[in-house]
Amino acid sequence: MDAQQQVLSPSIELEDRACAYCGCAAADRLFIAEDRLHGGPGQFAVVRCQGCGLMRTNPRPTLEAMKAYYPDHYGPYLSTASDSTGRARGYARKTDTAIPNIGPGQLLEIGAASGNFLVAMQRLGWHVMGIEVDQASAERSAARTGSPVICGDLGSVSLENAQFDLICGWMVFEHLHDPILGFRRCLDWLKPGGWLAFSVPDCGSWQFRTFKRNWYATQVPTHLYHFTAPALVRILSKCGFESTRVRWQRTLIDVPLSLALVIEDVGGTRAGGWANAAANSFPIRIAARALGCVAGPLRLTGRIIVWAKKPSD
Image (cartoon, rainbow, N blue to C red; front, top):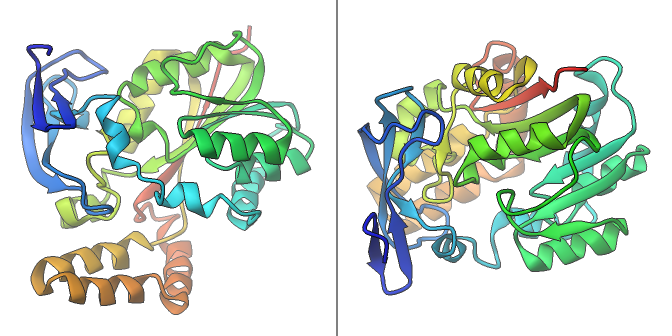
């Protein structure tokens, strides 16, 4: 075993790693959190790098050990397993309207799951391709689109450079063991003038500061890096992107979901279950969307969409 690795349980191996952005190993601990989604083993520290301020989960499960925290019933795998493309069409509309003069071309989605977004974009005329770490989801996505969906992680996949007009990753980069490498690989794969579009939780938000370990979007240990909008602008610029634009998603759904975790802490599993059911109810979701339409332009929601352009030759 590597000297920097430690055993969490007989099957979960942890590693201590320096910041992927600046290489600094020194960090300040912010809080300790657990796997609140699936109840996986262990407690995990969220730390802030002393060198650049980027937050990360450290120590963390190794790439192989992390598979234990993505069960078969993991939400994104299930939610995209059927032909329900309403949410994907919402992203597709952003693709058409948020950036001027972008039209159908070659598209790569990182974290394609079972293919809803690829199907929606294919219907708009895009030639699509995907990358997905889950074998079953990758196979479903390929079957639905009739297009290549590679089963693997972003760090190990080999693709030809300068072939995509648009690369998308919806709530993906916070899951990567090395998101900086991921951004650089995306830059290589984009054509000159191509765009990278992705979403991540906004860990510079009031929600992160208020709820901390109980913030629904903290989601350790699967969320390995905890980004803020200013940090992403710096990182993408250093990686070689230009014209970085940040928009806040128009939803506050993470607030009731986080309150449910607080209630679970105070009142136990049964109370938390009732609160979670209420948070996921149709009226609460409608209210979260309506309030998000006001909070989004004010930068008060907890999720951001980022667009970054590869410089033209």
